[in-house]
Image 1 (cartoon, rainbow over the protein chains, first blue to last red):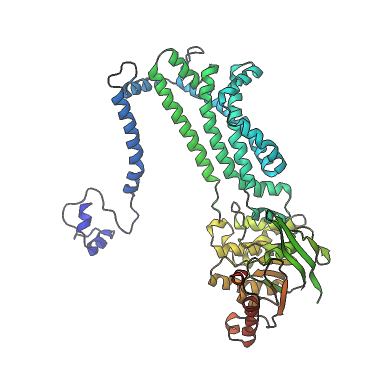
Image 2 (cartoon, rainbow over the protein chains, first blue to last red):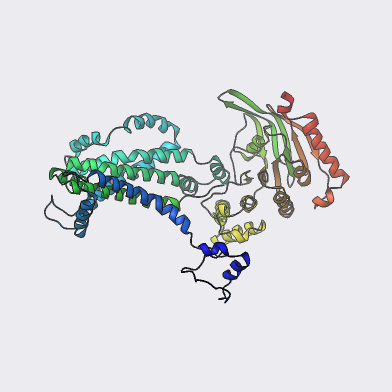
Length: 298
Length: 266
């Protein structure tokens, strides 16, 4: 890079030429110089995007290592990593209902989340549309939503157990009731914020109710709806761990509790990382879906 | 000439949170078939309100509006509107935006291939055939406005309503689109009602200029007939004494007799 500084403009131009000019003397650079008229790879930008997260993670691990140096009960990062490698080398074993691989635990949790969240979407999105479209309904339901939304997920669990008399449906019920609110609210807000101009277009064209729905309302609301979905999935993933801790069965939440009873803190730490990473992946997945359906207006 | 659009004693009163707002009073206006009429006035004088009444987007507090001897009770594709901010649907391509309108008007009576032809012809009319498969955010403001006009024209409306269609464009693009609009209107012989606040635009395009007084309770102050032969050429007209005279008349009305409300209040 240093040699580039000493290039005169004429030399730089010559270097930019595709022909190998013999005028190029001195030590040949190991990598080709970034040529001014050719978009070169943006190392600086990559550096700036990669470096800060790496520093953040390193700092966390470093502090963790420092704090656990002399501890006997709390595992060090190294020990946790070795244990994690062991755990993930055989994720899908099954030795009875209370001892299954971490892969199974994650999949069972994801299945509960999918069912509970899917039901919530099935009910919540149409409900949001109705609330957004009809003011009467909005005024009717909004006090109920305000009342029920802040309730802790675990408060719903006994109701589920009472009604369904089984652990699994109760967990799904808890996810359902906790993840439905963001979808209702965001969809309703989206419907209310459909630009008046678009609806005027619909009125001038005298479009049928079906066309208004499919060509105008739905596409206009979609970005809001997807935000709701994203928040809901996040909530569902938060809730599942707590719900499974109480209900048992196979699942990542139950696994955390089980390992606590075994006093296996290393596994609990691994579980925390796994929960975080799965949540991150879910979020990333939904953001990439949402990006596809966001339209640049104006 | 036959009266095609008739506005009889229209009043418009909005009830807002701050109380009743009397926007328009005693509006009487007739537009003949094939006529190009411009509504001009200071902002807030209710010209867009009057336009919305003719479109049927709002219903007058009292008075009657007729189009082709039928009462205007609701919006209808026979009175196509070009909105100020183009109002293209961002998730549809230019083709689909125009097709949506074409399908609605002709879908019941014509085969699909004919609908496609109509859509493409509409885009060609405004020289936007090349952008049929682009989405609105991929084209410039002037192009969007052209697609908006194509959407309106493709419906073959009885009346074309233009609500400050070129207001958001730069002067050069605006002039270009005005010329194109003149050509298109000559070709299609459309009846046009256009809202504007641009004096030159009004004189250049109109057969008659309807000048509105300042609100609240705005009404029609004067109507000026522009008797310049068509086709009109903006460069030649710039030195035409009649053009200068008409321009002066409108300016005189707007600034001498009905100066802006805020200036009066100051």
